[in-house]
Image (tube, rainbow, N blue to C red; front, side, top):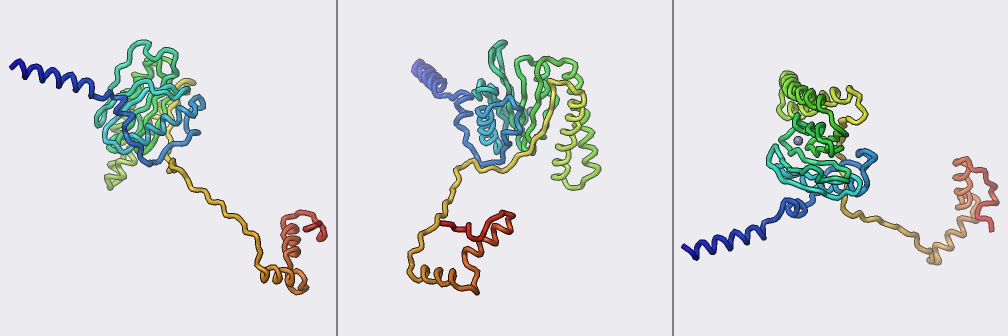
Length: 276
Ligand SMILES: [Zn+2]
């Protein structure tokens, strides 16, 4: 019994040491070649470094069927904290003043079977003072919720609105479309625009909900080809060129150049071409 207990302790200790933190696991996720958002899609306050952090997040999580969330600094791009969730949910615990002095934004992914727009709960940012932006890498669309400061009343309202919009837009789509895939796609669009309309019509400077499309971008290296002109040294080619230049019945290279300049509206004297 004693020996067994000893081994249990050793194994437990080893598991604690070997056990990767969520952050290590996040870093180790592979990057897939997936459609991305453009730097211009982000608020101007977001730096290039922050864009790289976001691109990395989209590439890592796009093909997962569970959620991740990272908190990051949208000026330095530094990842502040990360957590792994499940199919439709991710939790992260943040201490009071934990991100003091940072420009805080979060991003979480909505897997394929989750609507891309924010859920009612995703508006919790409205009652979190330290967080300025919440980004959602949804499967169909990318969402940006700007929410600076505290907006308690709006949080309660939008929670209510999102619940009703979620149901009513679904009913609307079910009555209108027969194909389940189209219902899913249109539900995503209708529910999202209902939320946008409600929030953006409030016209509060610090609150804005925007939706962005993904575009295919090759993040891998590109091959650029330089095709360069060879010197002509073949005696026959040289002889032919001389004959053409001298033949009054054939447009010479000089004639071609002259007519090109004329067609481009460039005023040039014939004798100025290839002037010595
Ligand atoms: Zn969410």
